[in-house]
Image 1 (cartoon, rainbow, N blue to C red):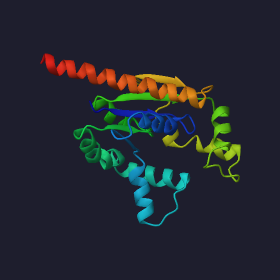
Image 2: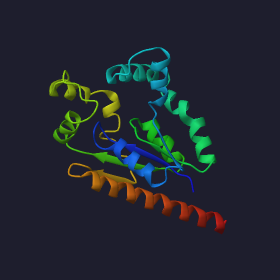
Image 3: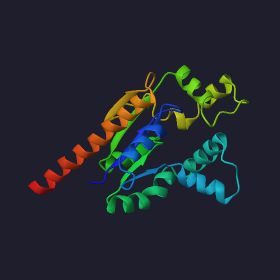
Image 4: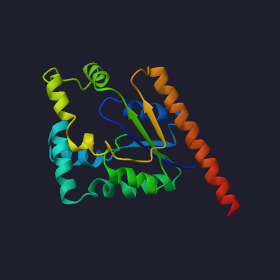
Length: 196
């Protein structure tokens, strides 16, 4: 049964890694999406370089005009994927309405977290590393609304994972656990349908 999965976490907690590992479990039936995907399309259409600061400013600016802009931008595509039996994985749940959208669709919500020092070390070894970005600048970026909106909010996560000490093999284990959970949820929903 098709499912919707939302992964939340700050930069370099492992959201994209888990999404990619999970997709490998069933590549023909899983799709990775992001709420920022449409934002990237806008930047590309306007020939604006895709930089994190630019994305945060434009994304938040449009969100200030219409808070549901990025959820509305993906709803039809998500409905189509689910209708055709795909599992949709969002690797960038950052705002309460994004969380609520996935929850309302009966999706699985996962929070990944890691200490700032661990995330900074991961950033320094990532392909997006920019030597002009000092730790101070990086720390300042952590204060953008997109990084803070789900902090200190009591949300009903299905799973919370501390990724501080997780190796790539451990991250694969997280993906395995999510795949099993998706299957179990599908079986439960299938039984409910049979009992109706």
